[in-house]
Amino acid sequence: MRYLAFMSVGMILHKYNITWSCFMIKKLLAVAMLLSISACATLQEEINKFVKQPEVTYQSISVGKIAMDGIELNPTFNINNSNDFAIPVDIVSYDFTFNNRKIFSGETAEIGTLPAKDNKDVMLSINLNQETLASLQQLLLTDKKLDYQIKGSVKAMGLVLPFEKSDTFYIPEISIADVKVVNANLSQLNVLLSIDVNNQNDFGLPLETLDYSVSTGNQLLFSGALNNQSISQGKNNIQLPLSIKLNSIFNSVFDILANPQLPLHFEIKSPVFNKSYDQSMNLTSFF
Image (cartoon, rainbow, N blue to C red; front, side, top):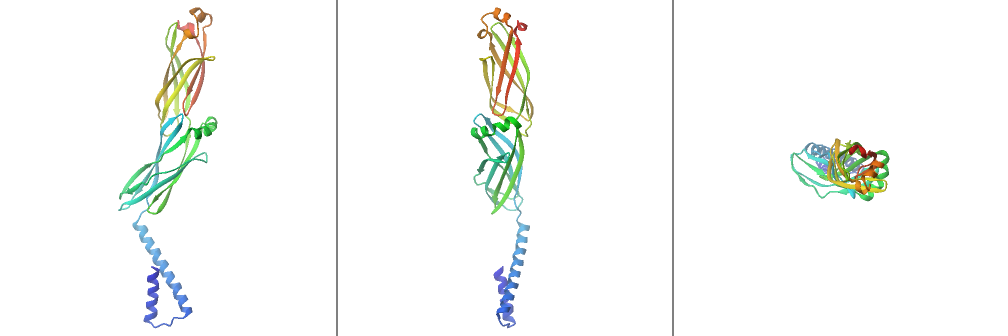
């Protein structure tokens, strides 16, 4: 564009046989620069009318896994190409922060070509290891929530397209709904521990394991685990079956009758919530 502007000025000077003085050259160069800038601006406006910038929008976040050794989060963003032609999309780079503290940085492989008038969901992978979770444990215990932010950019068509999403991760609220003896004899109690779990997040929580136990004093009576549990949004109820062998506590039925109150301590542990509960049972009511 600048070359054409300078050529136009030269043609005008030649046609009208104008003498090239230093003063006039400076003036004409200034005019040429203005013409080139105007031409480039006009060309840029035309390009902007023809080429539309891809749009990046947040879709959702899901939890890939929740285990004792780590948590995997999968936020999803959508890249939309509203042009009449395909565009190349390079990589997505991103940072993940908890309470304004950077926890994780990542980068995807090359996305590839995005067809005309099409869009593509890009799922990011954020892996929080056991060490990271341990550093956040105190905040989890006190605040019962963590503010998080996903911030990054998509490289496409030589452009850097920023995106950002902020939200809050809530620790599920857990309460004891009921402790019920479903079967009893002189040697064993079969108990069903019912717990309510309220998940305030906008996504479900897949628990790899949920461990639970019951003890009396320093004596462990029963321990068990539920695997691959899914905590959906909102209120959930989980049933935990336990078996207590009375003959491991009492030598005879006379011991039970002499001391029928059995203090029990229940422990429930998962990667995202823990719960302790104490209750005494009067064993004479079951016989």
